[in-house]
Length: 443
Ligand SMILES: Nc1ncnc2c1ncn2[C@@H]1O[C@H](COP(=O)(O)OP(=O)(O)OP(=O)(O)O)[C@@H](O)[C@H]1O
Image 1 (cartoon, rainbow, N blue to C red):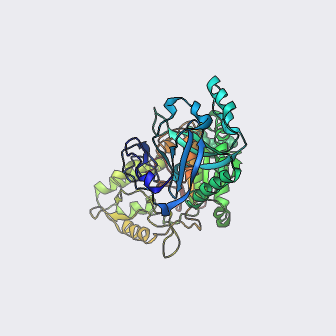
Image 2: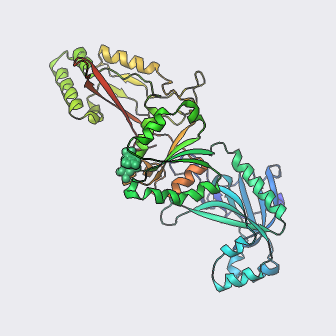
Image 3: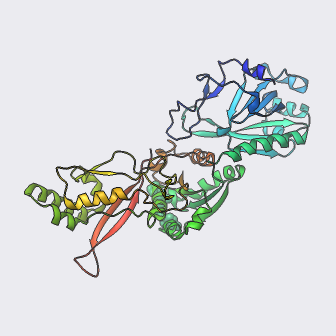
């Protein structure tokens, strides 16, 4: 197919992608929709490969592989494919963004024909189709009822010459490998008790996707509460650097446990004043004293409720997410992550203790000490409640999450650090912190 022919493809009815105007909340979202966006015309300099192939359910197609997409269009039907019904003989070109292809693989000879269907018509067609070699391009389609749910879809291409099939597989695979966002190695935690013991079955459902995409997985079935935490807390930086990401197959509980394991000793931001220091420092008038009494009693009664009293807390916390979108990019200076929330003091309630703390905190810009700042954490929903995953993919569908993970989608995550203080066993005067991290909503 020539460049000229490509340019003359009609604009209406094209399968196009709109990278810029995506409504989805995941960063590298892909939207396939009919005809709403203008397309750049194919430039011959961008052509990686082109030729004629057979496409299962369509017939003979002219195919062009560009650096960012695969485009095909029916050629004049001939030979055995003449027996295709007329509704299949559409001349509308289709395109598949490389960003939506999660795998490509050679198939055993004749596999495409066998996969086509079991109707009498398909059976007859298979008998008539010439002997061919095949390869599958694995992508997905959006569920018609729930747009954020993705359903795997394979395009089976064929050619009589095995070497031609191999060249297509190699070229497409090369483009997939070039995408550095896609993980190659993942550490997976599966909670066998998650989601009323359905997590194992969930993991088994998505394993083939990782195999097809050639993502290496090291799987740990958690044996007890705290197992994932311990593994990640004790992991050396070298251990972590061997992985492109950590994925939990479970619910919010397991996700937060893994998050805590990653951050527990790697997040070194200052803890802030203890409730006693707050009381001593700031009870200058009755109103403030009452407020701090309330603060202390609330903290002691229910440590995790300290976020609820945020309104009275004498900080004006930045409304930005704690971990910004680029917070996993290394700081140019020290290689550590930056962009932790900056605090500003409300002057009407500021005290020396809080001023010191705010200054101290603002100086700790690179306070997650990880040698692998690109390390990501993902979740495949298999819990009783799946709040985290709902705020990432928008769907509680394990296949959708697995596809997002394989394609390397990522988004910023808000993480809250909760600190509760309790008297030390050694001395009642000394208060010891108990630090927990929690993520429930991403974005
Ligand atoms: N083998 C195990 N035995 C007991 N508890 C486990 C085991 N593996 C993991 N856990 C713990 O179970 C807790 C809950 O797990 P998870 O979040 O995966 O499932 P869930 O309770 O069904 O879902 P959700 O947390 O969304 O309600 C986690 O804190 C996790 O540490």
